[in-house]
Image (cartoon, rainbow, N blue to C red; front, side):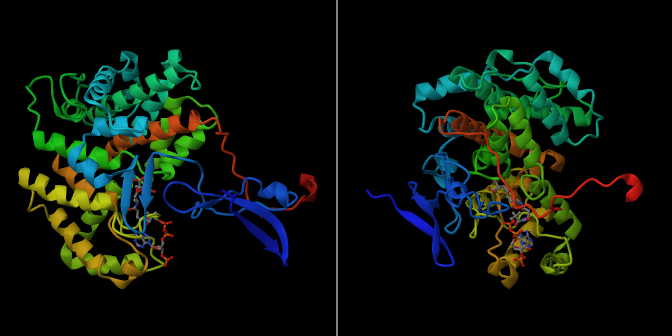
Length: 432
Ligand code: SDX
């Protein structure tokens, strides 16, 4: 089939002819990689924030923002949320296909038998004050894993990539739970590999050495669902951070630490904590209109946290699923009268009928309701981004592996539109 191209003209003269690349779904792309050469090194493209820029090939996750659709390796998130489990989804994202029972059993065994962390890693926690933000601690400890595994340092060997992937997915819950335990001054709890991935995490967070721990099945299932919904999301800020860090061949543990750092921002994965802070600031239903006005006021930095999305210009499908799960979990934990949940429902009801939000396609996103569930499980708001990072480690690792194993990959090195000082000579200090 003849290659489709587009022509770039200036004053009626063709200055570049660029090929069009088409994927299996979604918009086609104009391949601008030769633009600089074709225009005699006169032109770059300009797209701060990557509003309309595809940074890579990927076959992992597809989002249709207009329709509010999300597919992991082609499977709709609604079906995976209803029928799958987090470790099965992890296998799918990493390998591209749903596992057979034998493949899932082997994968699960591998993950559950890498859950312990090196005993000397625990010393790192004691360098942080008890009141250090758990995400700050997690960034430090995950990054320090790169000082431990010299047997898998060569990222260009597939076996090294696989063992690093399994170690990261397996150890982040143990590290996360220890972040929480450190923040409350309780002893760390060792993993119990007889439990599920989420059961193990809940026990490491909430068990104490002096009592038997009774795992709540509803909490275990709710966490597994939240992790499925948070596992991956295409080229979001933190995943793009991991890809860019990894493109230089950097240590995978250090790359994942950079992803956690990016996720922490309130515009990204830090939003769930910010939603709870916002709801507590609004306080009650009577204040909603005042805060809706603040959100619209260009002179007011206040934004409705948990609303809006760069890609979804329709409802975030994950928010719908989480909201429905909220009802079930709150019923189970008899928190249905949770005033913050009632406030969240009312805020959504008002915002989605307000012209300002409708015109800008601002709907609740994945972070709007997730904090409600974490809170009802007894997880404090400063741990919400840590929980997000546990789940998203699967997506980050999948994208890192896809990028590193792609023979086409190059180190990421964007250019710029320079608008600083033009060339000038040094002036002696006596003459300034
Ligand atoms: C996540 O990318 C991903 O996929 C991320 C994620 C994932 O799974 O990885 O989905 C997870 O990060 C979800 C988003 C969580 N963040 C929040 O909930 C924070 C609140 N939302 C925003 O700050 C904002 O909506 C973003 C950051 C999410 C998206 O910002 P964009 O795409 O850059 O949009 P924008 O800032 O240009 O806003 C467009 C307009 C502006 O108004 P105008 O200048 O056109 O008049 O919408 C307004 C904004 O002022 N707007 C909001 C708003 N979000 C956008 N106004 C009030 N409240 C908001 N929340």
